[in-house]
Image (cartoon, rainbow, N blue to C red; front, side):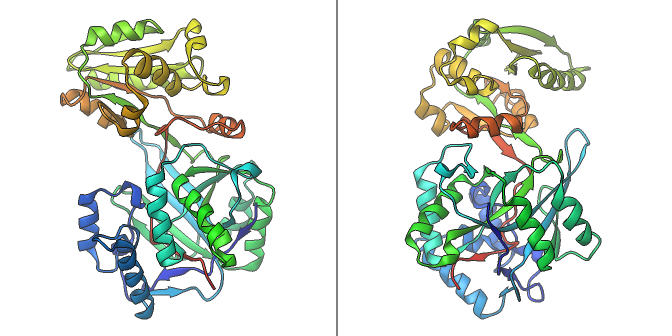
Length: 423
């Protein structure tokens, strides 16, 4: 894979406070959060990535040009790579330091197998991002790419030189994640990064709509810079890369007996009863058992409204042949659940699942539990953590994961760097 540094557009930190102008990716910002970001700072990146009003793209262009003219946004003196460490603590208390870097990669069609998608995309978001790219002629956010390097070359040979220096950015987001960014401008270090990834295949972890937008834009632009896209790259060989599942929450009315009867056709069920005194302890046991059991056999958790039990669901061997999916996908707990229970037994149409009608997709386990305990849902199916090796195997085989199946946390901030698509 061809990697290039970025002659980046960055915020002028002599004019702005960086913590007030960064924002999450556009596709996770709610309307309420957008309003707050607008109020937070007149130069917040949200005014570019998620502009309000009827003339959104033209207004974003106006903001962008004005900020450059007034030196709120400035360009780096030379092409650079941004090395980033994201620090946070999981709900279980584990301290994570996910490491990666922001650079440009050559845009490749999926047919080359040099870049692998793992999820499907929808037309609406791609059209929106394409109009914004045309207006500003720049990448405002990164694609999230994963590569594999067991030798950890970049971590050992490059990153170690910079981590003790004063960072270019050191900021906490609203979720308490610390984002530490260093600028790599030494040609020797940049060359090491380029050589390390030269023979690597990339997997798109997040940003499928943005990548396909970049593909479309590259075919219509005459600028050589538009043949590259800004991406964040992280090493799957580092155990600090964690993929969170997306749980399935049933909000359509079903009684508990109906759900359990349908589930029992395909799964062996183990009941974990609890009371008010040991609920937290049993909940932890419940989550631990899902992960432990899923190593050996497809396992899913179930929590029902008004039921003082958690349920461990282990797929019966004979049920695997009933899953209408390619063999490489049949190993996924989510595919088994969606094909056998959600689609076949609970009769959700594909359209209802896509539109989240009567079903919701929730990323945090505590939210999935809260939906039941607050009587906002009838059943919460708790999924096991996805495995990177399964995602890569599925992608290499030419298939994609089910919609809303993976959640790479933490998200990448917008506002660290902008990649201009012209000289």
